[in-house]
Image (tube, rainbow, N blue to C red; front, top):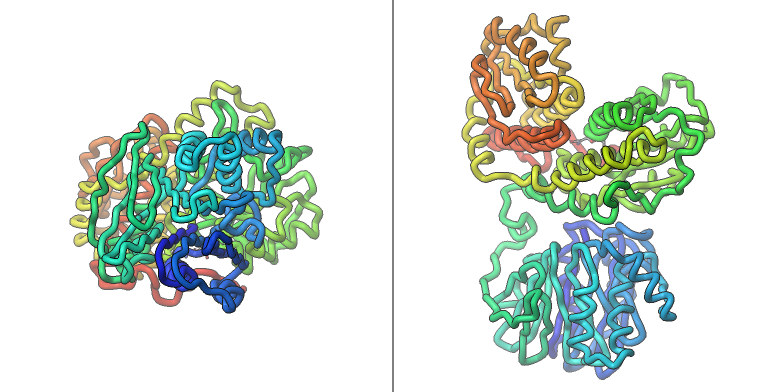
Length: 604
Ligand code: AGP
C-alpha cells in the first residue's frame, strides 16, 4: 500500500522526506518520488523500484533554509509502476501525492481534458492537481480551490498538495486512508500516512479524521470538517517503537492484516460496482468473446480461492469451470482448447508453478487473465489481462487479506461473466452488488468475537488432528481453514467435504479428533448437520461455526448470520483466520514467519 510523507520547515526537506519514506518501505511499493518547493522553484525526482534508486537520483540535490516538500511510495492500482505514474504528480505549478482511489476520476478526467488539461499519467491521482489548478485559473484563491477540489472527488484518499501559488503551505485532506500531521518545538510540520514515518521528528501529532481537510504553514495548523467548520486540533503522543508502529499496535503482521480486510476489500470494490453492472476497466471488452469454458489454476491459498470461485462461475455465470493445482497441471499433458479462458490466481505473481502454467496456456493459444496483488509481477506482465486485488503488501507468510480480496474479485468476475453472457438479469446482478457492498462490514472483527476465539483456542492445542469440514463453497473454505492452521500452528489439519467423511476419514473419529464444522444455515445446513452428527456419535470433538444452535457441538462459535451464504463465507473466513492465529500464538510460534515456509515460492 502506498505511503505518504510531507515536511515544512528549515531543515533539509530531502533528507526528512527520504528518511520518512524509508520508514514506510515495509508497506511495499514499486516506485517512489519527492517534490520540494524552495525559493519559489520546484525540484522533483521519481524512480521506479527500490528507494535506493531515488536516493541515487537526489544525491546532488539539497535545500538551504525554508522549504516545503512531499513524498510518496506507490503500490500500483491504476496504471503500471512506471516513472510517469509515480507520485508526486505535476500540474503547471503544483504537485500532489495521494493514497487511495478516486472513484470518479474518469468523469473528472473527461471534463478536465475538455478544458484543455493535458494528462501525462494513467493514474487516478493526476485529476486532483489539474482540478485544483483549473479552479485557480478561474480566479479562485488557493485555499478555496483546494476545498472545492476535495469536495468534488469521490472515493478514498489521503492527499498532500503543494503549490507555487502559496509557497509556504502544504494542503492536506483525508477520507478513508490514514494521514497524520505532526509538529515540534521548532514549529516544523510533518506528515505521514503511518506513525513510523514520524517517530523521532515530532513531539505531538494529530490523527486526522475522515472528511477533514486543511493546510499547514510555519505558524499554523488549520483543519476543517466536511461542512467547512474549523476544528480545534487534538494532539496525541506518538508510540516510541518503530516496529510496533509498523504493526500498528497489533502483535503480528498477520493480525494487522486480518483487521485490515475491511479496508482492503473496500479498495478492491472501489470503482468496480455500478448500480446493476460490474465494471472492470482494466480488461479488454472482448475478453470473453467465444469463451465457453473457464480454467482456473493456482497454488496454496490462491488455489482455494480458485476452487471456491468455481462454484460461483458455474452457479452465476453458467459457464463450465475447472480448477487445477499448478504443479499438477504442468505435467499432466492437459487438453487446452482456445475456447477456454485460462485464469491464474496469485498473490505474488511470481509463484514458479503458476507462472509456468500461464506460459503453457499462452503457448496453446488460450486467452489468459491473472488475478494478482502485485502489479508488474511476472504473471501480470505475461498474461493478456490482469485484475489487481489491491490488498497492499501482505507481510504475514500465511495469506489472509490477499485471499479475502481474491475472493472479492472472483465473485465480481463471476458476475461480470453473468452480465456479459446475460445469464443473470440486471435485477439479480443488482441484488448481488448490494451483497458485495456489505462485505467490508461483515469482515470487521468484533472485539467480543476475537476474545471468545482467544479463550477457546486453549482447548485446541493438542489432539491427533483437525478436520475442517463444509459443503459447497464452504468446502474450499474448510481447506483454507485447515491450511491456515497447519502453516502457523504445525498441528495436523485436513479439509474435507462434509459428505466425504463417512467414506474413510470417519475411521479416525475419537475424542482427540477435533472437527471444525462450517455450518451456516444458508447452505445445506441439514445435510451438513447429519454428517456432523455421524462424527459426534463416534465421540469426535465438535467445534461448530454456525448461526444456529447445535446440541451436539462441544463448542459453538456463534456467527452473526446473514441473508446470503456469500456473506457467511466471509464471516467464517475471519473466524478461521483468528482461531488459527490464536492457537499458534498460544503454542508460542512465530505467526508471521512460520518454519519451512517462504512468502513467495519461485522454485518448482
Ligand atoms: C498461503 O498462506 C501460503 N503461504 C501459500 O499457500 C500461497 O498461497 C501459495 O504459495 C501461492 O502463492 P501466490 O498466491 O503468491 O501464488
